[in-house]
Image 1 (cartoon, rainbow, N blue to C red):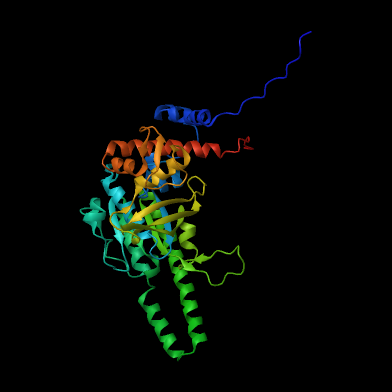
Image 2: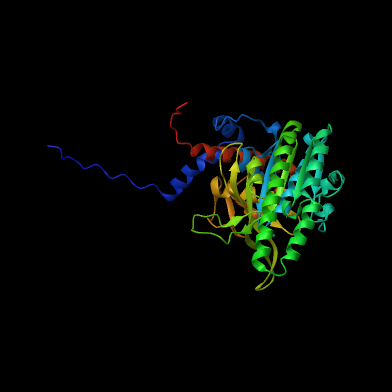
Length: 392
């Protein structure tokens, strides 16, 4: 009589087999990925409806397109911490538009009420050297002057992309300014009275901003222009509990309410370079973008990118880090000088930072990289869907 033999237990998958299985997805070329996942999200807008934000990852966070993030005919706000990179981002947006032939007929304008020393355009933003204009009447000093400049531009036949840096430095009208100074003088050092006067002035300023933005919003929309408003994030000292917003902005709620996108720019870790053993000098920092409002897709995605003192946003490095974390097969979880891209569409066994340097020298590879990150981003977005049937 034959003995009943016990079934052998299944052997565990070896690390090599598991690695080979995991890498199968990487064997798909760009066309395969695009074909399989083209239905991730059917947008009610196209690439032609968008302008670039200055960062590919920020574009994707705003619109799911790598080529543009902000919609034509919209107001977008960039409140940020001091020295976080909000001005660099606004300038990068303008430079990206100036370098794009789709916007050859647009006016590219920087409205700088602070009248600070500008960046070295030739070094950091070469496309702006011959394209950057001032608003009508020069840099706006008051809210009313800013509203007048927008109105004058909208009456013209040329669409525009304007960055206002920043809203905090716009003053009220001169009569109101004189009344404020007189009231403070009459308070004769009474701190409580002065505080009440300044509070009243702040409320009045917020009302004027609300009125101006309400008037220019429709005008901007009709002309297909774009307004980017930079704001200063201020620590909220009146937090009552941990759920309260730790930040606030000047100008009331109107800038946020009027915007299609509102994204905060926060200061991240320093980027340093070792000049000699144990001597490190800061050469840049990471900026984190936190989406607070997105009326284009409804999604709220946060992204990060490095900003270097030498040339601004490193778009290529931010793309490669996203791909390393979400798609490529890497030699280590933490990216460092010796990290290798073990398997990717661009080759195997590539040193991560050497690959970045190679892309910097190749516009063709850069274009391929942006297409790849868009496909991978959309694949990730599809994985976030609940799969439930819609009610309507």
